[in-house]
Length: 232
Image (tube, rainbow, N blue to C red; front, side, top):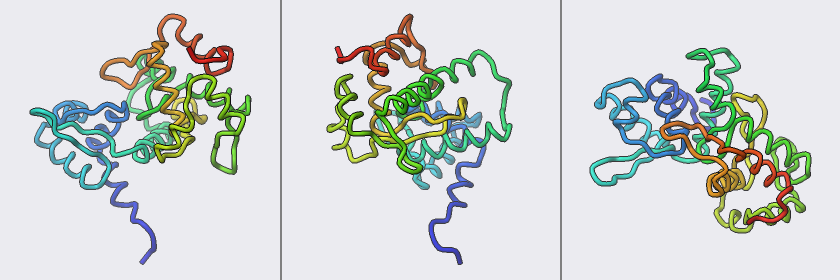
C-alpha cells in the first residue's frame, strides 16, 4: 500500500468530459446554476445534477441556495490551480477541441483564471514586476520583495490587508496560452479587482474573457509599471 493521498479518485472525477466542462465553465469565477452547467456540459439537467453531487462530495465544488436556484462554484483556488495546470498540459499535448479563432484570441489576450488575471496581459505584468524587483524567485516559488511591498502600496494595493486574509500573497500559474507564468494569490486577486474597479477593462458576460476598454490597457500598464506613481 502506498502512503499519502490517493489522487486517482480526484483525477477520475475531473477526467469525465461532462464534469471537466463544468469545471472549465466555473473557471470564470462566477457561480452558475445546475441548468447553466448542464448546458455547458452538453447533458440533461438530471444528469448534470448527478455530476454536481459527485463534484461537491469530492470537494471540487461548493454550492449555496438562493431563492429557487442552487448556485455552484469552484471550492477554492487550489481547485482552480489544478484545472489551469491540466489545461496547460492538454494544450501542450495537442488535445485541442477546436481550431483557434477570434474567441481564442480574446482569451489569450486577457481572461480570468478563477479569481485572478491570466493571458498575455497577466504574463506581461508578472515579467515586469520580476524585472523591477517587486517580485523575486525563491527557489521554485515567487515572493514579494521588501521594496515591492512599498511599491505596491504606492499603487493602491494594501499588502497588510491581504496578509490578514490568510492566503498566500503570491502564487504562480503556468499560463496555458502563453506557456509562461502569471501571478495568482492575494496580489493576483487584487490586480484583477483594480483592473475592473478602475474600469480599464470589463468582464465579458458568460465568458472568462476580460476585454480592455479604449486606452484601458495603456492605463493598466502605466499603473503596474510605476508610471502612475500614486493610486488615484
